Image (cartoon, rainbow, N blue to C red; front, top):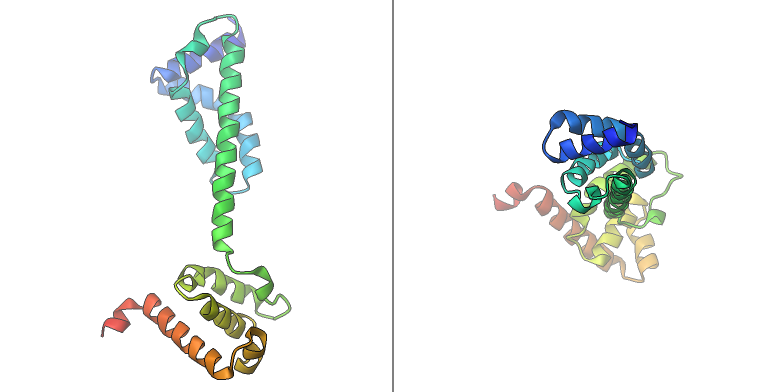
Amino acid sequence: MSKEQRLVKQILAAKSGSKRALSGVISCLDPLVLSLSRRLHYSEARADLVLSLVKIVYHLPDKLFEDKNESYQRVLAYIKAALVNEEIRLAKIQQLRITRTIKLDQDLIDPSSLDWVTRSDLRLTLTPELECLTQQQREVITYRYFKDLSDQEISSTLGLSRQAVYQLRRRALAALRKRLNPTESKG
């Protein structure tokens, strides 16, 4: 029995529920999984792809195994295509996560400041909370606390009066305080 035939038999056994056969299939296809996971650039990518491989094996169409002579090529091509599609799906999800995390404009973070890392970390942490604010409130908070602009500088930048900037900042901070500490607003 050839190596290819043994793999097809292992895949069939795994499809039928054999954990030992499934383990053999996973180790045999590990180079493909490893190659795809490297392209994803996140720590759980390999585990995600192995889980996808298990699902793919369990749901392989029986038609793939009908012709014994070509089943190896067909089964392997099907698995590879399905894993590549899964890698693409996971890449899109990862890109969406990154986009949501870094939603605020990058140019508003001042990389020349000494505490840039701290400010950007704080900004990423506060991103979900900032979404409860209006666009103008977000801009005022960003300019004031991430770019260290004064109310006068912010008013010039946004074309608002200094009093309007002060009011926007005050309301934004109140909304953030309420969102970050809901028990304080009840008392």
